[in-house]
Image (tube, rainbow, N blue to C red):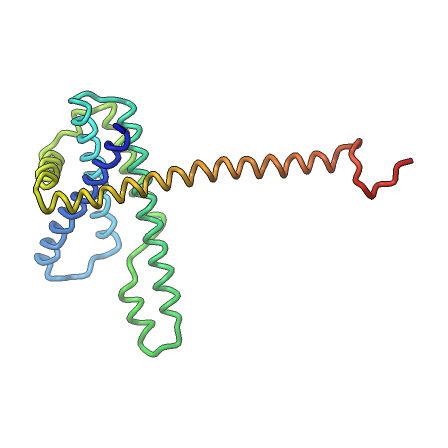
Length: 224
């Protein structure tokens, strides 16, 4: 139950963090006057977003352990972050494919509209940002004092305060519950894929060995 509650709480952390980040970016876009971002700007901002998210999750993991750095909690948090980041990349890929297919339709003006709505996506930058965020998260285990800073502490305090509010807290807890279910399903699917894949490979290997065995013969083999 402690593990489930831990995953649930991180789900709430992620949901509230994304909400706060959305508010911050909305203010930034207003100050920019709605000017379009360059590819470098988009992934620079995403790098900052993911690095601070990793920082906040690390601080939360330490806080949940009563101020101690528990390796099991850090490993579980890292796994959850990896699942979360991977899910974001897969979601972006699906959206990219959907807009690309719709843009090829023979409808006047639809292609241009779809291209304008298509999200910016570069798999190399996406993976690079995720790897950097996970490396930073791992680095905090060896240098935890670097995780505590004004911005990350503000994020965590704001998230925990919002979580405790009656209305908003309930909404984000519902999101955290569905996140918990999603994580459990992904872990279960991964385990089943490994087990089923391993059995399938074993069956194929055994079948191959049987066919190449000199003592093997089928029903239709002539025995002399």
